[in-house]
Image: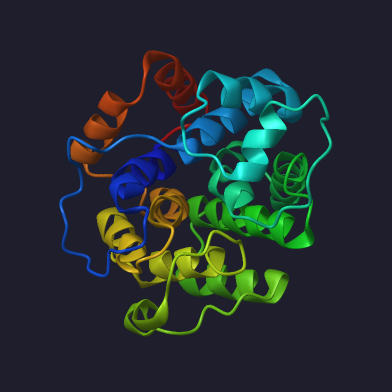
Length: 256
């Protein structure tokens, strides 16, 4: 899941949606992890230690209150009410990557992706976004071709994966919903030649850059099985010790 985290960190300085080029420095003094990383790590923690998603998300959210959560999630983490709030924002999809790496069947991946999403994002589109990212990761790490992954995503979730990066970039804008960010992130993976290329393409769309790069990066890690060492070194350097410990434990159990 370091592929998702590195994408989040690289995209963190471009989150306002102004970036419309793939030519930019990957790291700067302003690079940081955001809510994408915090909740990705929370999902990994839940999977490894059989924790409750609702309780764990609230604990992580309160521990990292300045990570950049959406207003509904921020209110939820401090609320006494554990009920979900019917969101179809891309928060469900950005945190789903550990599911795609941890489970051994597509059926389990789909079930667990829904479980991780539905505690907050119980709108059908919120669940679908998480399942699409997690299942793409599962298929990628199982060696499926890009054409097979694309066909499954289109047939199962109804996303259109047509269009070039250039066509999307021309009119794309910041949108933090699953329907208008999950397919775009998957297209960036499909159009990429390696992990770094996928990240650059995702950020170049000029949208919700950290989350687009987080999602595209998670699938690209599974598919290419390699991330440039300088990217992982910088990403790990930016994480705090507690988050990094969960990442390393997850990697030791599930690889990559």
